[in-house]
Length: 110
Image (cartoon, rainbow, N blue to C red; front, side):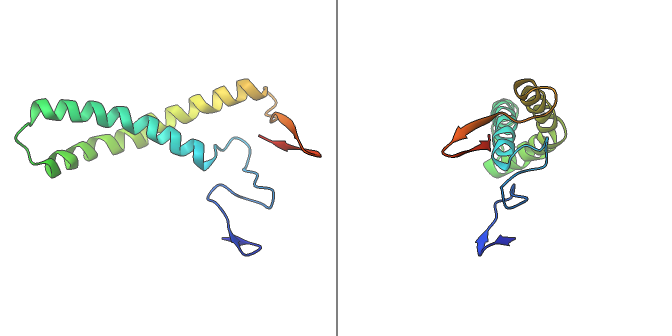
């Protein structure tokens, strides 16, 4: 998708770079995904090192991926997104209004 000859980022939905209310930015989703996958992968690697030390690294990576990806996608990431949404609503107020700050001559949403 393009606007004025420039490619739009995945989270841009209009000319002012606003997202639909309640949708986390692509950057927030990337951090949340990392926060879900890193601990799962670290624990999984430790468990597999103890259970299958003789397995080839590719097989261990395959088994780890079979467990970590569905766990992250169906369990960890959705719960972390709910937590993020709750924290965002608590910080911005119950009416869903975004906090604005002065930037030069006008205001811009955070």
